[in-house]
Length: 395
Image (cartoon, rainbow, N blue to C red; front, side, top):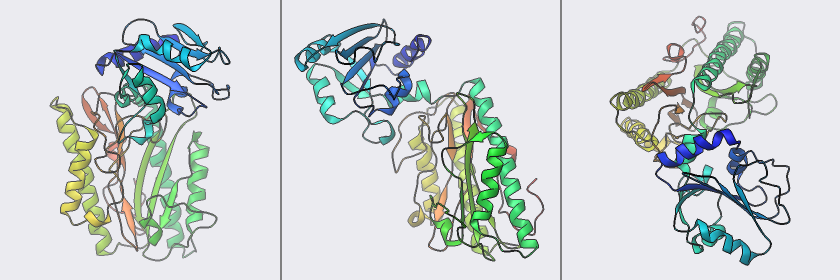
């Protein structure tokens, strides 16, 4: 954290009706604390430090005499301790207040505070609450430049899907062998040629491999055979500091036309995807609160009503920001139930998926909230029907 960010943090604290946000770290175990406070992960962190930001006023840092400079770049007063008794004494002035800390009984992604340290803080009179809402407000909401960055990444990803599918169509038309690795190389090269970066290779999964949501193709991968479902999942962002990810998934069939069961499954997935989007958009436009858990429950109810309860393997969506799986609200009532509200600036995926032993598919779009409206990134380009090898280019 730099001094200019202190006001944003304190605004988030007040919005969450907390008395403060308390960070602590040992051996850099809390990635979020280091990231938000701009602590260099190469700095030695062999002693516990605490940094307490109140809703009003200046922060207080508690640091060990062995590592007295670890919080030097942060504003506020610093208190140095040598032993445990002094550390406990320095905690006492923070007691009697409700602090947001990195704990959650459902959101594992922010739950870095260990139980032992939590007990020490509580013994000093600190009341602990989850900082999940603070993390979202400070790190998981997009401003205008963030939305623009996200939209540029989304535009590029849709172009890359077109290019990759055209490679598959041409191989089918020319009756040339094709494997997952061929398409993965095309997609990876296209991402790099557009100056984008990604934290992991895209997913190209054909046939039964598409039934594995996080399938990873190695080497040549599996051969793509006549009639196979092909799942595409790709995510990337620009290289600039603060760039925002986009993350989309498309589905094709390596045949002139899909089997009836594939067409039915995909049509119903699109129905659910659009239904949950309309639900979110309606709630936001009406000024009503809608949480990630509420939205996911709607999607899950619809999928179950269509007979897919037994083949659901994951939540309906995740937050997106400078990380593909970001710090903002997830569309999830099932894996890591997320009670946080969808706020102005929230950005997230909607990606219902179903997975059988012989195939699987998911369709993914990204949504962000801007001016109290739910907007689908590159909405006019989102997939509405299965890609087939006898159709023309995507656009």
